[in-house]
Amino acid sequence: MTRLKTAARFLFAAFFIAAGINHFVNPAFYVGIMPPYLPWHLALVYVSGVAEIVLGAMLCFRRWMALAGWGLIALLIAVFPANVHMAMNPELYAPLSPVGLWIRLPIQFLLIAWAWSYTRKA
Image 1 (cartoon, helix red, strand yellow):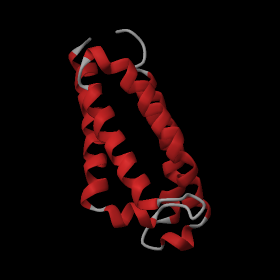
Image 2 (cartoon, one colour; image 1 turned 90 degrees about the vertical axis):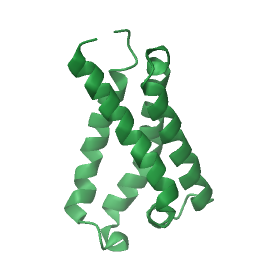
Image 3 (cartoon, helix red, strand yellow; image 1 turned 60 degrees about the vertical axis):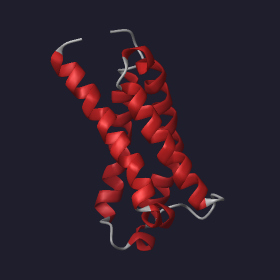
């Protein structure tokens, strides 16, 4: 792998590790953005936080990189309906910009593509 690819991989891993840690530092924020049709909001916040930390850490090791990539894809797909819910109900998330909520949706696909790039052999 080139240095740039390695740096991008560690940046991506750091993003997910930091996001996962934030689920424990600021769980109220994540509970507040959970769609009402999902049960066990706090438990799901913690489970997704652990998943982000573990998958981000796994991405740091070549041996686990492909598995981490697939796991991140699954995670990003799993949270996508919540992001759609937020975009379609911006009045429930007043502190957040309605435009920003819609911009998050295509960004999610870019993150999935980035994660997919780690599912293949270098």
